Image 1: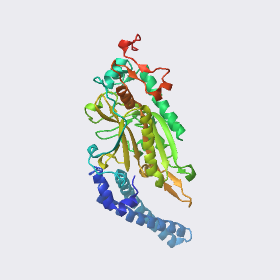
Image 2 (image 1 turned 30 degrees about the vertical axis):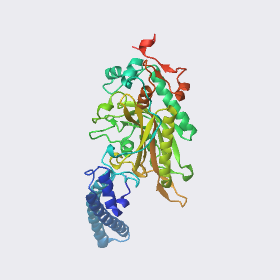
Image 3 (image 1 turned 135 degrees about the vertical axis):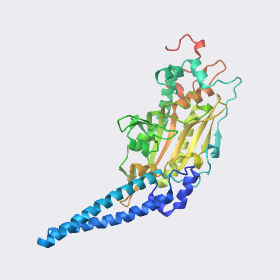
Length: 433
């Protein structure tokens, strides 16, 4: 959540942030400020009455007779009045808290203003787009002809937007995870295997709400649990209500998890196949740092993402998200979009966000200052590898004219000696039934 002092002292800045993030109607800042004043005035009165109640309680023990009875009556009246005011105070607090929680983070000064993804800024292109002397297939056709992906089997068992991986497809997914973990662990990230479920406090606190037209979270009926949409949820939640030691910052984690998303919205023709599925595997980077380090750490996460894709030998471009495409939590966000020959266009494969102290306030995560006080940490996340979309990029960029697919050099050490995946028609082995 945003610091309420910022809302009080800079209401016009906050209103502009809401407008720039295309979130008008989410919260009424004027109403929020009105409730805030009412709450603080009532809180002052409640605290005064509590002090009177406590004083009366002490005085009663010091007197007797009519004086004692008079004080008892006064104490009873004060208690009754106090209860009514405390009930009103709780209603105001709940209303205020809900509105403050709805206020989005303020975009960084360097974020371009725009209504939607059309306003995103392309920062650079890296790598050469492969020049294929044949009509490229998309990953759906390739995966099925290679016998490594079956959407039919996924739909049979689980429904649409689920899939099975077989043979070399499984090896490739595991190879991507091992490749990313090895690179990031050498860079000082602590390898972490997180739960695939989290309590509502953590998926709500990191911004994955189970509601709306594009709801992402699958919730467990009868329990305070939801399937996580990313290990960001669990890596953020692990330090909730803690005060971190200054000397341990920055804390860098690389987490592995399955990710589950309802993907309830309509996303268009590019969403077919592996691009937008209900379950996939992801390697996620997460950093806790001091506020003055967070912009530098954000650029560092982007560098790590670029290093991974440069290693895979896949052409990509880097985008800085505009205000209207940031979402509520982020102050700044970069995307990497890989070239995908099957669509003759780029597709998002990684994202990294600087959420400043927004998530830390939601989850009450601070660090100890040299002066002895505490301050909220800044929290950042970044996709190292979302295996489903990375497999799209590999299959489509490394395809050959005969329908086979070469294995990127960096993945070969993890592929049990496999250097090329050949179509079923060119192999003796049938696809598993």
